[in-house]
View 1 (tube, rainbow, N blue to C red):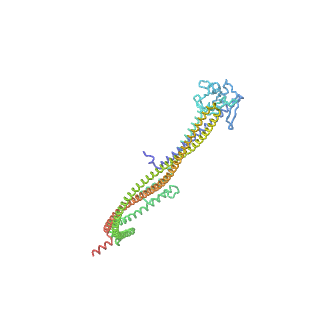
View 2 (view 1 turned 90 degrees about the vertical axis):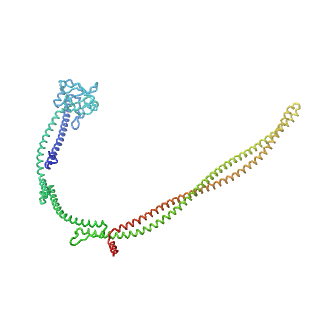
Amino acid sequence: MPTLSNTSLKMRSGIAMVLMLVSVCAVLILIASRLATQAMLEDAQVRQDISLRVTATTFQTRFDELDVAYGPDGVISRVTWGDIPEFDEHDLIDQIGKISGETATLFVWDPAEGDYMRETTNIIKPDGQRAIGTYLGKQGAVYAAIRRGETFRGEANILGKPYLTLYQPVFGEGSDVVGILYVGVERTVIDAAIAEKRATMLLASSVVVGLGAIVILLLTSALLRPISDVSAAIARIAGGDLTTDVPHEGKSNEIGEIATRVTMFKADLQRTRELEEQSKQSQAEQTKVMGILRAGLARLARRDLTHRIESPPNDPFPQNYEELRTDFNAVIDSLSATMSDIDQVASEVTLAATGIASMSDSLAKRVETQASTLAQSSSTLGSLSDTGREIADKASNADQMARKSLELSAQSRKVLDDATRAIQEIEESSGQINQIIAVIEDIAFQTNLLALNAGVEAARAGEAGKGFAVVASEVRGLSMRATDSAREIKTLITASRSKISEGTVLVEKTGESLGDVLAQVEQMGSVIEDIAASVKDQAKGQAEVSAGVQQLDHMTQENAALGEEANAASDTLKSEAIRLSETLQQFQTAASRKAVGAHAA
């Protein structure tokens, strides 16, 4: 079974265009169907608005309390009914159905149920009864929209038939919705009309597709015939017939462009054949040249630089490759001259390598001697640095001892100052005791006078004053003893003050001497601190010098190693130069051939 990729271009183009036509028709049918459906639904909405106007107008002719407001487009915008009456008969609602041909219902608000009840309707149930006394229902979207005072449009299934419904709220005196005007348009009729239109469009599209397919096949056959002609010409050209004329070459459309390009392709094929003939001739010349070059390169591989490519008159070198022959001979001449120069340079390098080896050997010995001397110097400096470090440590200990002595001297001086202060205070207290003793002497003196006066008065009193005279005598005796005691205490205190003054002087002298000692200790501590700092700096400098000498020793050892490496490298250079000379002697150059000839002669 042939696949689509194996069918002819004519068939594939026809099928593609037919499928395109079918797709376009399908899209048009879908768009037309949607437009028809939209038109039918808009028509149903218009019928709803007309049925609602008929219903409102019919009720308004019977009840003056009903007020209807219309919008700019003639659609009812608000219905107001102050007091909706009860309907015992339903001839009015039946009349509405006859006029509009649609279903209609009047709902009235039932406060007890909190829902809208069907008061009158032209909808007849299958049992022959009217669907009155039933409620709208609180759970649906209709109830919520009506309670908000909004008109509701939707779809509902009433007595087994689909309807497009319209619920118009009826307001009372205020903003409360007291009723609902309902109209419904049966959707079955609309769906039947839509289906009929779809069938009509489908039939028309089928006819159009059939006729279009026939026309497309005919047009495709006519349009693709020039391509078939050009394809046949291409097949003959591909078979090797380059004299074939390409049809439709003069046309200005795409077929003409294809034919022109095929003609250009045929001309390219003709030129290709000519080039192939030329290529065969060139290939023969190239084979000859490659053979000659191969022979010359084989001689060159054997280090023979005397071979040249000649062009004798009886068998000349191909003219197109004459430059290659000239370049080959020039390369051989250049290599021969270069090898001669390299041989001379190799000899000079050998002599230079010998001198370098001798100098490197001397340098290595000197560096080894220098390294030994530096190692000994580094060891000596290390010992000196250790000794300086020990001296610095001892100087630091001496500095610490001097600081400690300075602290002890300061403490001793403080103790002496406290002792001097205490002695001064004792001296001041002695002075105060002298004042007290003076007061006691005054008191004793006055008491003695009083005792004398009392004795005189007692003598005058006679017998009555004898007892008082005895008391006065005792008081006088006491005052005398107090006076004597005060004198003795004064004498002792005077002697003590003398001793205290001498002690004070001695303590002050001791403090001054201790101050001098403290100053000397401070000066000695400062000197020891300077010595310690100098010794530390000296030790640090010695350490730096030692580190520098060690680094110099390390560098000298590295230089020695480098000298040894240079010595080894010079030996290697000398060996390689000798080997280079031996290698160059293997090449046969014009100069070497002349030298061999001269030696043989």
